[in-house]
Image 1: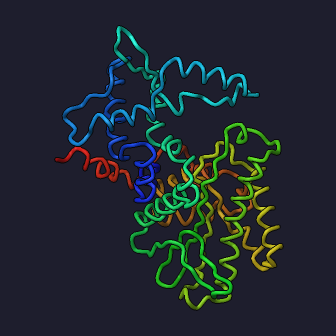
Image 2: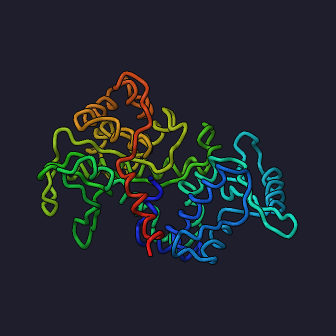
Image 3: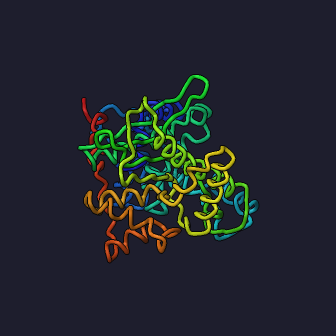
Length: 365
């Protein structure tokens, strides 16, 4: 649901259609229906579904080009990966981007899905592959904008009585400023401030404590988010008249990453906060350093769990629980489990109803 919501952003959806050659709705409809067919048989011919209106042969060809490759091509790509990869444990899997294999038999082309979960993954998180190399998407931060919109919608669904808004410009022409990405307020009282980060972290970096350019880049990016929320709250505490906001007690600053880092643990968090402190010192914002202890650092999956497992008092309590000295550095999911005293079931995303609404236009006349 997360990635479908992110890609429903108009600019990102238009970019996807320009790059892939079909609309996101048609791409997902073909993928979902085809995936169901693979659940019934090992291999199929090309996608055919005359009952779905509006899908053309061009749409099917565009989708196949994005998610399938001939077996001969995949063999060559596999050999390249093996020859250039230092680690066997963290080697890139070629079937992640193209989870369907095509092969020819008696002049007919057939398709096989070797791993069930990879096609489902490709139709959600794997949408990233289709746009990440595009200059327009990168320059305009379209994935970041879609992610921010998703986070706003998620909090707005859980807190309908509060005002949830995007970042707001403030300051002077000489020194323009922007607030963090998401502001949540009750009346004039700011209760939560959220900065969203989309930095990708390769699996090999996630599972290693060794220094690398990829690790430094990600830590620096998240540290900028931590510095942003702390610096903003410090400025707001001194007064920003044009925003007409006051800091509630408590007001929780959150930095959330789109990447579900499997080992977003103590060492990396310490490096993030250490880097954020240096950035505050360099910008002469030493008054904001004490606010570092109030920042909740989490992945978007942990945020989804927080917002869907607990009621509103439970959400506030769990966030305060995460800031206790004994819990600092722990993944938020571990803190939530301890707060609820038991294993947390994977929650149902409150925006889940949107997927059916998103695909429905394809099947309408």
